[in-house]
Amino acid sequence: MGKLRIVTDSTADLPDDIVQRYNITVVPLKVFFGEEVYLDRVEITSEEFFRRQTNGETSSTSQPSPAEFVEYYTPLVKGGDEIISIHISSLMSGTVQSANLARTMLNYPGLEVIDSGMAGVPLGILVLNAARAAEEGKSGEEIKGLISRWLSELEVYFMVDSLEYLQRGGRIGKAQAFLGTLLNVKPLLTINGGLVSPYEKVRGKSKALARIISILGDKFGYGARLQCLVTHGDFPEGAEELKKGLRENFNCAEIIDTRLGTVVGTHVGPSLAGCVCLPVKD
Image 1: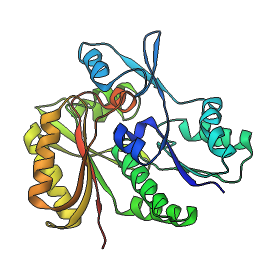
Image 2: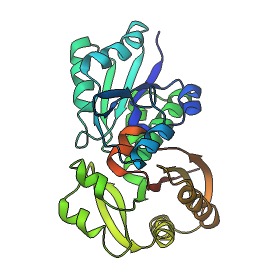
Image 3: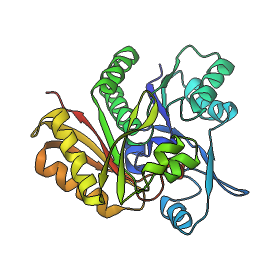
Image 4: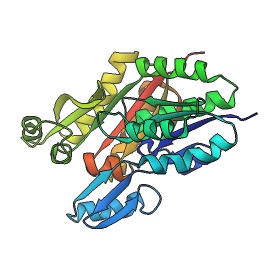
C-alpha cells in the first residue's frame, strides 16, 4: 500500500532541507534570460539570479508542461501513493492547468490537484504543514480540510521598492505601478483572491517593515502564538528586521528563513522582504 505524498512546484520557495526532510516532490518552473532557460531552484541559484537581475538583465518565466508533471507523478503513481499536489495560484500561472492535464493523462484517481490561490511563502507554509500532517498519519480528506482552514487563517504581507517588476510582468495595473515610484513610497502588498494586491503605501523601508508587524498585531493580537515563514529577494537586512519584530511582538512557535526563487523573483524584484504567519492552536 502506498503512502500519502505531497507535491508542489518551485514557487513554494521552501528550503532544500525541508523539502528533503518531508520528502516533498517539487516540480520546477522555468526562468528565461533571453534565449537561456533554467529550471527554477535546480539549474540556477537565487544568488546568481538576483546578481543578474540587479545588473539589469530581464527575465521571464513559464510553467511546467503536462508531460513534465507526468514525469514527476509517475513514480508516485507506480508506488500506489495517494498524491495531494498543491500549486501556485491559477490566476498567476498556468501550472495548475498543466497539473490537471497531467492528471487526466494519467487517469489516476488517487491524485488531487489543489489551486492554492497563493505563491511564494504562503504556498510554502501550506505545503510544509500538509507534509507534516501526512507524516502524522492524517488522511487526504483531513489534509484538504486543513488546507482550507489554513488559507482562511493565514496572513501574508510583503514590501517592495516599487511595483516595476509586477507591472512589467502584467501582475498588477500600470496606475498602481506609477504610484509606487513616488516620494520614497514603499508599497505593501498582500495576496487576495489569487492575485497580488496593493495593501497600503508607507514612506521608507524601515517604516514599511514595522508596519507589517503592526498589521499582524492588528490581525492576530500582540503576543499571539504564530508560525511564520520569512523571505526576501536580495534584501537580507529586511528579513532580519522582520524576524526581530516578530520575536519581539509575538510568541513565535517557529520562524523559518526562506529565500525567493527565480520565478517569484522575476515578478517582484530583489528588494522584497515579507512574511506569512499562521496562528498556532494547541
